[in-house]
Image 1 (cartoon, rainbow, N blue to C red):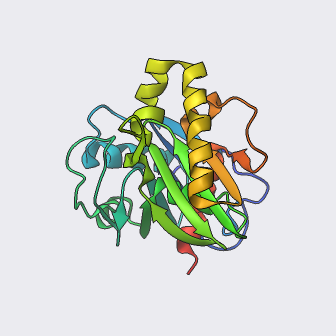
Image 2 (spheres, rainbow, N blue to C red; image 1 turned 135 degrees about the vertical axis):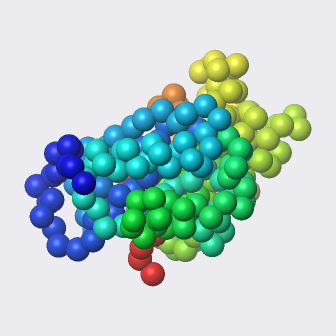
Length: 242
């Protein structure tokens, strides 16, 4: 593959190079990582197409993979429930994803081994300390979540659980809600959610990521930290660690 991106000084690191892919409702991001999860290329982003079918998304990933350069394996963070490489939900994408064997199809298209996990799970893998109870939420088109206990992952699909006035976390904190409410009211409801989640999970730390985390305004509780989209990609290497 032609290498357009400029590698870091660690580009000559020994070991497999991982193409990390983060699929969101509005954007698809890629980067190549060394075996320790350090970036070897610049992060690239392309818009997620309307009615994003598997064929459309895989075509974009293939194009971005060529732009990124050589890699040995692929990790994908996907916005839905993933079980054994198969997709059970994809609320914020187009049709054709349910029960689709994305791992097998993308591996065939890229001619590399592929591993897939929920995007909030991958975000957490790149963010948590591995000590205590750590909750991760991602704020974007939808709301993702994952829970880690001493570094061990327990996936949550919290976005579709009731939050306030009979509406779910996603209905109240997703991108449509942000546009409808505006930043001030949206942040007020986010703080309400943080308080409820603290009482529910008694977490040691809460990490907030996703594209709309840039709209989160302080003050936040001292055990709550914003994490970048880059960390959502860096967790991709962890999918290859047994």
